[in-house]
Image 1 (spheres, rainbow, N blue to C red):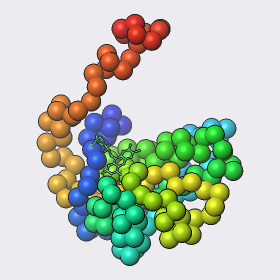
Image 2 (cartoon, protein in one colour):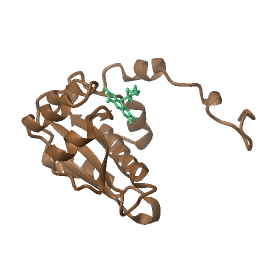
Image 3 (tube, rainbow, N blue to C red):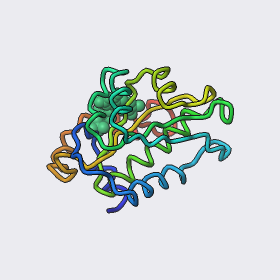
Image 4 (cartoon, rainbow, N blue to C red):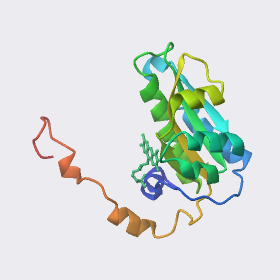
Length: 176
Ligand SMILES: Cc1cc2nc3c(=O)[nH]c(=O)nc-3n(C[C@H](O)[C@H](O)[C@H](O)COP(=O)(O)O)c2cc1C
């Protein structure tokens, strides 16, 4: 699948098959994170792969909108080192997480970003050192519905701003 295809097919998946993610595929999407760009190449990120159901339940309980992580075989917790990159740790970690999202879509895997969690709870549960911030999490697994279902319709009907409303030529407000 080419990159643009993967970007078009991607959608937030909140319902997963219990099928485990093969280790080879997990390594591949993590490699996509490892290769991400970062400010001054500081690579301030650290990714915790959480498969344990007890841990997933505890994390899910800490937020309102991530309950479905209980049903996803893998949760990836994206942490950023504030000491290594005080200004850019969150952006760098987010870029790496999005690399995972796109790579996963290319492999037929579903993901969903999760920002709904209680950071202190997650840090304690996963023994994350003080200097790290928990930037965001991703669920990862095989979508219950499959990524191919109606993806064209989905793309067409997707609620996004129009390109002309989010772009300018040369100066803010001049139409492209
Ligand atoms: C930083 C970030 C945090 C998000 N947090 C959540 C979340 O906690 N729970 C959830 O169900 N979706 C979450 N989402 C997914 C968005 O709701 C979703 O990307 C958006 O509605 C667009 O839908 P799509 O991803 O299917 O295109 C988050 C997305 C981002 C980028």
